[in-house]
Length: 197
Image 1 (cartoon, one colour):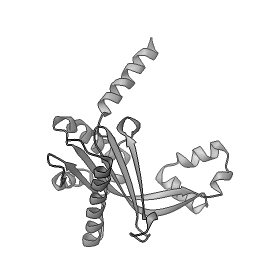
Image 2: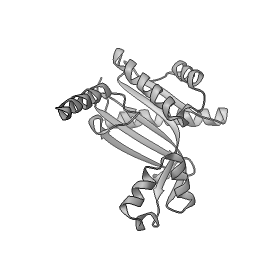
Image 3: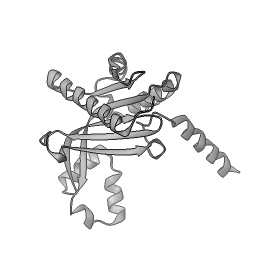
Image 4: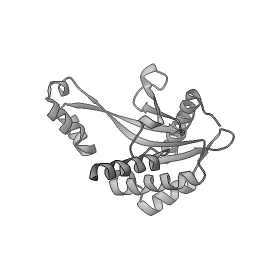
């Protein structure tokens, strides 16, 4: 089933709405995982969400090794019965550079950018970044990716209440990439073999 960018963005927003409802009902929210199967409707994989939380704990998204294990595991099982699309939603912080940040040298900017979550919060305290609480949804197919960030402290009806971005799957990377990860790994291994010769 071919999913348009508009449909993909709608699935991401549907995931965001489910996440916001979870937070309102339970006062906390860790993550949401959903698939689009035949017919194009979002199917929330609550059993998988519970299994992940039971195995790695409620705070698994704050642990790099746990994130690697979960996302690598999902990427391994996805090809067994690939859904038409996959949606992942989590609570996030959106960091934006300030005017002060732009006065830094390239090396200083790189140091802040690569400092990780705690380092980014330190950059906020130092005045180099601003931070906003948000939910981020990543909806992806084998061809396209849509990332929608919903800013929690903004009027939900305002034009700037969310940020929507689209990518080709080949231009998307990182732990959340679910389609084509094996192909990328094979390409990296081939490149290693070539550089060893």
